Length: 125
Image 1 (tube, rainbow, N blue to C red):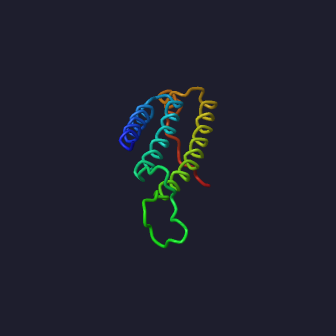
Image 2: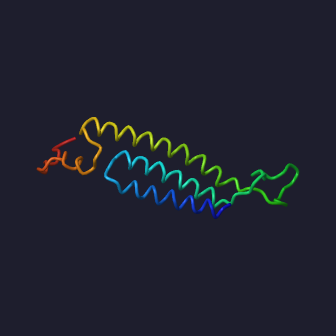
Image 3: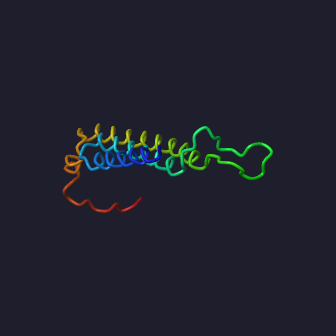
């Protein structure tokens, strides 16, 4: 099972790098989302998948006497899901505002929107 998940993680990373190297801003956003999901799956796979075993020590025991699931990767993934959703929402709003301002989602055309002349530094704040 872990071998298949490692293959899926590799596919996620490959697809996300391909999309991040694109010139379209929307494809870059999808690449960021895929990269976040790939990292979450990587952490989950690295924590070893143990089926039907809770991530807690049974009541009355002070030490682990049998196989239990590792709770740390699960907690890290839950935190990473929240952070990646917030990051994706922020980048999505940023991309929408840049599209509204410049009128394109192509990064090469966005570069043309920069002024040619170097502006002077601000004289005061």
